[in-house]
Amino acid sequence: MSGSKDIAILGVGMHPWGKWGKHFVEYGVVAARAALADAGVHWREVQFVSGAATIRNGYPGQVAGATFAQALGWQGAQVNTSYAACASGSQALAAARSKILSGECEVALVIGSDTTPKGFLKPQPGDRPDDPDWVRFRIGITNPTYFALYAQRRIQMYGDTPADFALVKVKNAEHGFTNPNARYRKKFSAEEVAASAVVADPLRLMDICAVSDGAAAIIVSSLEYAKKIGKAKAPRIAAISTVTPTFASALVEMPDIATDSAVAVPAQSFRAALPRKAYEEAGIGPKDVSLAEVYDLSTALELDWIEDLQLCERGDAAKLLRAGDTRIGGRIPVNTSGGLACFGEAVPAQALAQVCELTWQLRGQAGERQISNAKVGITANQGLFGHGSSVIVKA
Amino acid sequence: MSEPFLPGWFTLDDKAPQLLGSRCTSCGTYYFPKLAAGFCRNPDCNGEVFEEAPLSRRGRLWSFTNAAYQPPEPYPQVEKDRFQPFAIAAVELEQEKMIVLGQVVAGTGVESLKAGMAMELVLEPLSDGKLVWKWKPTK
Ligand SMILES: [Zn+2]
Image (cartoon, rainbow over all chains, first blue to last red; front, side, top):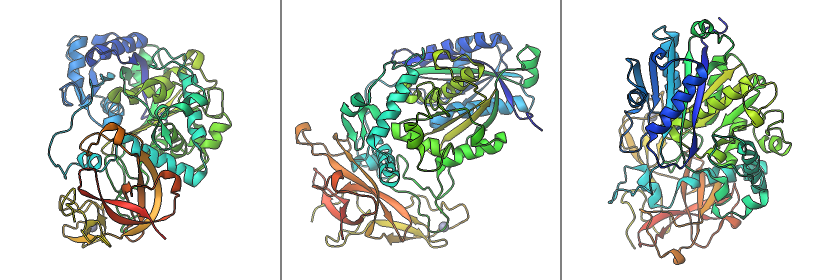
């Protein structure tokens, strides 16, 4: 059975993250062409285009697949569009994998791209008690509140300190410093992080990630196709987990103001469930992992993810960090790309960007970010509305 | 006494206010805010009948933070230089086995908070005079 559910990653490509002010389709085409060139596959060979939807730009969610196919030149491929918040890219990847494994297509383009909105979206006027976003803003609970509550919980439970969180930023800034696709390529000292303004105690401005423009694309195929074009040794996708949470929620998640009640069934961690399913699907465990790309919406959240991925015991992530284990060159490098700290979040592209980084690392093409002996990489992310993903790529 | 920011979300008892949630009559699961649609979210429960459930007034502090900047609308706005940062608490209710967020009473900053502290529910007005629930450290 080994390998029977794997698909090959033939090519990856990105449009650099930034705030370029262009249309998201432009970024997507740049990323797609880069991925096609990297794969050595002609666009006409692509039989399925799986797009991660952008919810912005006045195109609410349904346009990605066909829009990119048209921009690349309609050639009769089948299309699909996936929306799953931050996990949209992974869900688009899962759609491509299903097509390939069912034999409906041999080679597919998976693509996600986004442009940041101009200015702040103004909420609708009037009382809207049925809208959890309206309720929480009405009582003063903003997005950083949630990340700060998780961060403070680490301080209270495990003795983490704001200096640990700053160290995550310093590490990721060093990692992303030479990444040509990163938006922020500047090293920071712990003092600089500590000097940035407190947004939501204990988190400061530099502990929280920004939003960016950017695009990522991946060409995937059946193992037979990869072999046919001389890429039998291409990295493989061994698992794509996109499970929902299991009731009852253990954490208050944005935009809610309360958890589920766990009187009837026990509380469950959503974040921990995502990689658990991925490990199960790939038939490997945390000990097999060489590197991880995790969703560091805040610095402290990177530490939570390290524990959710079971790369250490619960509560020990800061110890790993302090020991340098999660740096490039360390025992288990985390966010070698620089993570969201250096990229900023481009929602439909971000989960794919994580897979791009793993691919470059497993191929030994990560330049100055290259880690040694990379065999297995894992991603993890979580977004709104019960969406999240974890993807395992193996050499 | 002044008006609540939303009617029906908490009792207006100024000594011992309570959040008003709902409770599934089949499995006992609590909901706050009250469940809008009439189906229990417990995957093992087909309950469709809910009763109003005043929630525990006291709980343990699970975690906390603050708003160092004024939140955007619909948070009632004051002049920028009049804005006072406020603390926010996540409080675990033992009986309901759930965590509920809320502001901490004015004048209590994050420096005086610690996980595990006993907290109780009180009502305080926001800057527009409308009442909201807040958490207050207690014995
Ligand atoms: Zn029920």
